[in-house]
Image 1: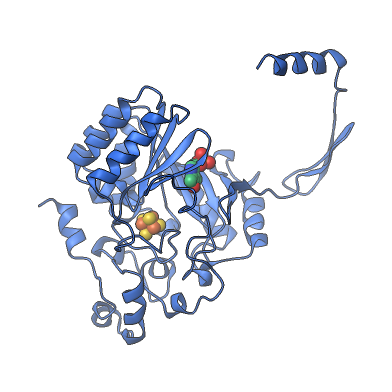
Image 2 (image 1 turned 30 degrees about the vertical axis):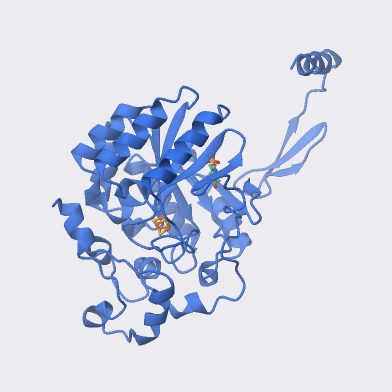
Length: 362
Ligand SMILES: *Cc1c(COP(=O)(O)O)cnc(C)c1O
Ligand code: SF4
């Protein structure tokens, strides 16, 4: 057995397992863990400094999960936009393809809380073949995002098979993997895994760091291995109350990500997912965080802040009010709040005509 498999196997899966180590009363949590699975592996557990800190809050069940009376189970209507089980086709040219139902840790704020790690998500060889088949029959799909659950929890051979089948589809230009493994179980990024992945370029991985304390020597090494294999790494952070809802924490996280060669891609406003209401912050707080980043630190450390629209509308970007007015004069506000004016050139007749003619030829 490999090291990462041993770590995974030693995961705490029952609230009672927490009592010895932290002395908390775990009884109220039993019901929570019945409803939503718990898995805290020893590596991630080791990052906890004290009860209820940002690492704890992401990993350990809370009674608040059962008190949520606001949020629906599937706010993004992924099930409605699934032409076949385990594949979400929301946008014209790309799909989300769920290939693994398990994760190396069950994050308490997960958007797919309704199904990860349970019976609601059955992924079989047949369901994966059906997904591959769907992608083959829809040549407009040029970007496939492997997700789950966590695709990097699959065995090397299984992943190799999926990637090989995808690469054999000529209309698939890029493959992306969404994975929290570099954060929660970095030991899984073995040389053998990297050897598999690097065969299928252009391959991108978006990982999911939420707090600077998650950037350790081990996770930095895992990310370095992937980047050294030519895999660009991006990061998708979820804005979470009591975890990273602080401009200084978020800035530090973005800066530390760049230092380990991970490029911030998105900050998500927390989805309205049943059992996660206690994690949601106001949108104003998100806008303030973005304002605290732009101009105040490297532009490369500034991701897009988005709300994944309830009802399946997709990701919608939110920006502080830099654009004050648009017209012959464009009035702008910079990161310090000072006002500047840019003179807009007049739209010329011939440009308009050229544009119209070009559109006509389509
Ligand atoms: C997020 C998401 C994508 C990818 O969106 P990008 O903005 O291209 O990263 C694709 N499909 C679904 C269903 C998604 O939720
Ligand atoms: S790793 Fe991702 S899919 Fe798995 S529980 Fe965490 S957020 Fe959800």
